[in-house]
Image 1 (cartoon, rainbow, N blue to C red):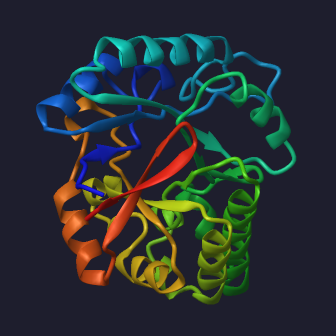
Image 2 (cartoon, one colour):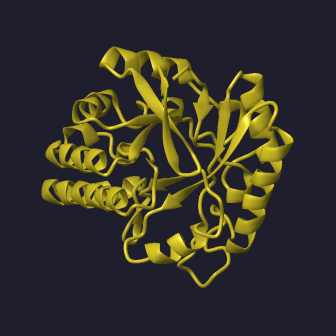
Amino acid sequence: MGKLKFDFHTHHERCGHATGTIREYIEAAIAKGFDMIGISDHSPHFYSSEDRLSPKTMAKSEFANYVHEVLHLKEVYKHKIDVLLGVESDYFAGYMDIYKTEYQKYPFDFIIGSVHSLGDSRVSDKGVWKKLTKDEKEKRQAVYYHLIQQSAKSGMFQILGHIDWMKKSYEKFSDLPRDVIDETLCIIAQNDVAIEVNTSGARKGLDWFPADDILERAYYYGVDVTFGSDAHGPDRVGYEFEKVQTRLREIGYEKWCYFKNLQKHYTSL
């Protein structure tokens, strides 16, 4: 179980809100000495009748092209780096059978499950919080974590994305009750799903996703971790990888995980 450098969370221009080609992300990972690069662009809105529901998401008609491009580049670069096929999938309760059917068509190495929406609003919508009472804020937090719990139980995902992303929209997120977070970490551990240490928050004046205290509790509950920069530009590949390694060792972790063919493997920190 040697040490490997990997980044499982990267986007590219096809999703409509990132820059750079898949090839450019691979080249950036090679230049930084990475052993693996996971390509995991945002899933299309498969539940919608529209081909592209939003300009900030991939079109359904582009998904097969996305997969084929990754698989082609995996072959092109096989002697330089291990290119892994992934996708960051939204979790929409009631629609996941549609998504599962789509994903089963392709040879994914991993799928990241992320909660970006709560009913008719985005998790990242700052304006929503301003209208809520204290009880309503706690209820919104509970809805968010119950969706993450459902994601963990679904059997669809190897990795759960940015599990405290809600703090991006609510600066007092850490003041909300922690019981539901502990409950969620227990469920994640019971279902043998990993969480990512997502460093994109550090680029926005926030902590990593999840924050340090949640990482410490994740270790306590036996939750596996992996790494994802959530890069939306090639220059962000592997962002703060070594810092994450160091902090996880300080917390007590001795290993973290990576995925191939939907199977979990471990490498030492």
